[in-house]
Image (cartoon, rainbow, N blue to C red):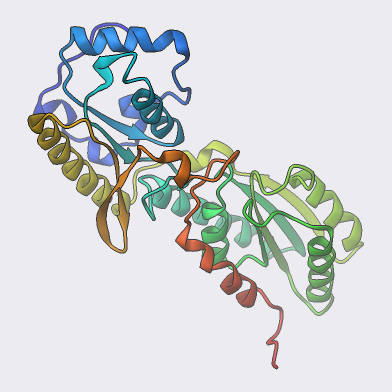
Length: 307
């Protein structure tokens, strides 16, 4: 916590509903050991009775770090409420984090533009989207844009996969196909990178089609929030404030995350955060959307596969 803490009143956030989360200020680093004493002193000096943490993976990790140090720093014995806000949609306790729907809409619009221009040629696009170790954006954008193939970090990429994909592309373009679309999550595989896939398809495609690489990058993070994200952010923030005030009034030191599950706002205990996430990667153990990859594969078949 640097500088003076600004006290905000009700009207200070007027009009923010149409703005992105960067208006609050963002930080993707977690505190280091030397930082916790400073944080504890500031919480005590400012008489802060609770924290509302709006953020992604590092926000949740920071909340967990604070509770592991409560014996050392009593100032951390306050309620901590986390609200999921990340385009990666890689947090436990929620099916949809704030920002993911907006990013998905942005990816869909950009890919649709690529498809329009490519229809005048015989071309295959390999599009890389964000998401880190979570394939949510890749899969959902693939379904929304009719991609032939989606490469996910949860599944990885094998040489057999690539052989099949090359064969399918060649078969399609040989009979008049005009567009190929492959979407790759940024961490789908450390060896079979996006440039590797482009070079492979270009080489094996021969003269049937050419290949272009498109890495959307940080344009996925911008733009005005979608209606879904605006409404969800309002719902979650309202519930979070009510929960935080009630916990502070009751003297509770609960550490929870709010999230949308099965259409309802649910509360997840973050004291067991390591049990909720996969080791060594940034994604939760439970990802309900992972039932959809078989649907994407069926929809991408060049012709019906009858039994």
